[in-house]
Image 1 (cartoon, rainbow, N blue to C red):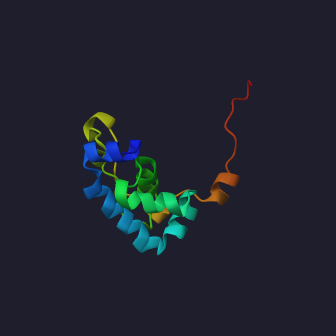
Image 2 (tube, rainbow, N blue to C red):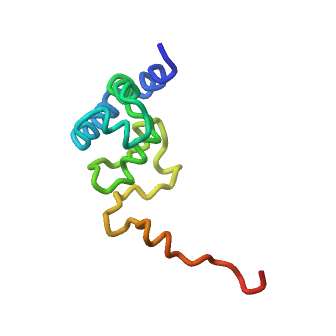
Image 3 (cartoon, rainbow, N blue to C red):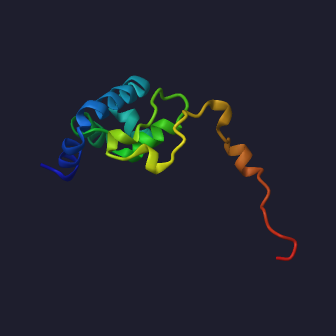
Length: 112
């Protein structure tokens, strides 16, 4: 048993993470496209079907407005109240575009 298999068996990952896996496949259509989006191999994505989607990718899925997934810390053995997270799914109009970032003015004091 690998590290990830043991981690997700303890947390009951197969139930929750499998649904995120299915959401990702439904959204991107193939394991290859999911892998390209997240910068991992198709084989890694294939493994997620068995062991669950790692938490960092679940968080990224939550932050992507067009992926219908809302991160739940309890699926990863975390206490939502202790984390103090605002888990409202962002919308497209809340996202910062690359153009806004490029046009952002540096913030510094006159004294510096």
